[in-house]
Length: 284
Image (cartoon, rainbow, N blue to C red):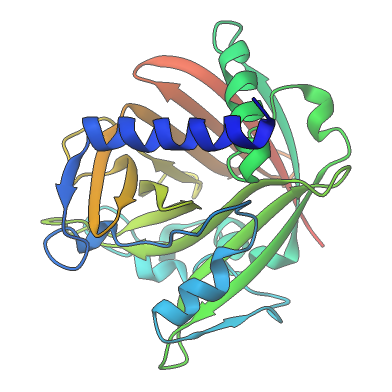
């Protein structure tokens, strides 16, 4: 079987699995909070940006030299978060992400590293999406970061695309869509991150909180369907299915004692630690 045929077989099997374990959802109605970009066949990369802009009646703006993942951190203000309490440097990173350089280090749990390598080879690198680095040398030459804005019909920032590629190869590691979104029945907006895939996507809703030192914690805890956490959405013809998945993340964005902005990122499967990532963030 050729690599291409194997890839298509794996994709069909993956979609069938998520249809089986997921629930029918109405992305135009009760489950509109899960309405997010998808893409067509082939590598993902940046291919979803134009289609998503057209879908929301807007445009893609690439000339955002100081653009951020969020237009303002105040869009997250709610019952459990006040942007005014953030360390100004942390806030600047999210509001002017394009002005920051990102260095990353990865450390996998010994138990999960082989599985991570297999998934990265079979899916991530092939589709150019969610290709998590599995070896230290994968990111030894650094990671490029590019921010693109999706502008709605009113000229406002609808979302931001954050495209991260390996400097050594140009291959995509992540291609994410970032915005703020309010979950059903919640009075606290979440950071909403979507990773588009063919006829589907992976979505993460991150709950923001400010620590006593002004640092930021974003977390996707365990919970019920409709609360902060990770979801997989797939489309089968005119039907959409969604499943909540037991993947939990925690980001801690802070300044160290020398004033350097850093992020500690943990990814867990249920309670088991799968992967630690550390980011050093420097102004360009």
